[in-house]
Image (cartoon, one colour):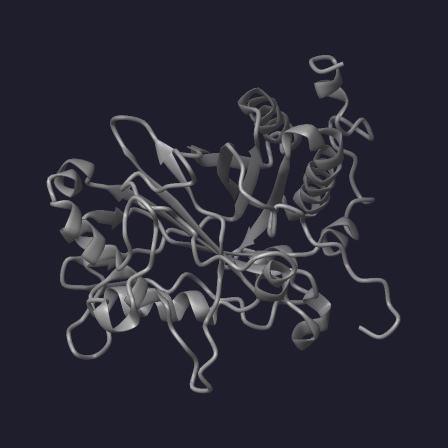
Length: 330
């Protein structure tokens, strides 16, 4: 990037875990691109500012633009590797695609703040979009999935999170952006909980209580960790940063799986390994106990990319970003 100022990443991409989350999936109404572009910029700026305002409850978030909507929205430039969700199916293993135009991801350690901000964002978009899906996530025990196993154990730590998650010099126009894939998995917990502990551990490839990964030679080829811990031809690990959380109610519950990465290829390779296996019939046996309901592909540009469009249109709240919340939290 030479001596240029680095574009600011949207802070929810690499944030550490939270207690609560809200996921909002929107589709744009027809012909609103010119008004929606600055409206999105305002929402992204608003989320960015609230990160400081509610630092004590670790508020963070990001705005993602759907792969299929990108060209309508920003026809001048496209992230080099952006493509639709890689839908896959084999046997009883299904990874369907369900694309949305916009994804708003907000997280916080206070549920009330999240609820207010979600309402606020919905109002900021006014009549420009339709809210198609809404889910609310939560931390379960010590960052476990509802299966009882720790989730995200392999996540990169510290500054390495940025190195894995954010686009670099390879695509300068989209520096500090990220490729995001979202799948809503519904677990069959009654079926899962009938399994003996050792069988569950073999399916994950790690111990349940103390979260110790099996030695490589002890891992079944059908275990989840075996299927997703992949290497490139040079022996380097294919890494993603997982920002997943459990979601749901008694009626429907599971994992909101969210992969963020500087390339979409790593996620696609993992999904292929889970669904299609290794070419010798070894696929991910965890998929016998959970079902992907959705699959969506987004790009989360830098804040600076989005806010270059924020002057053309004044939203309902004008320049009063964050004002409506002050009356609640003075």
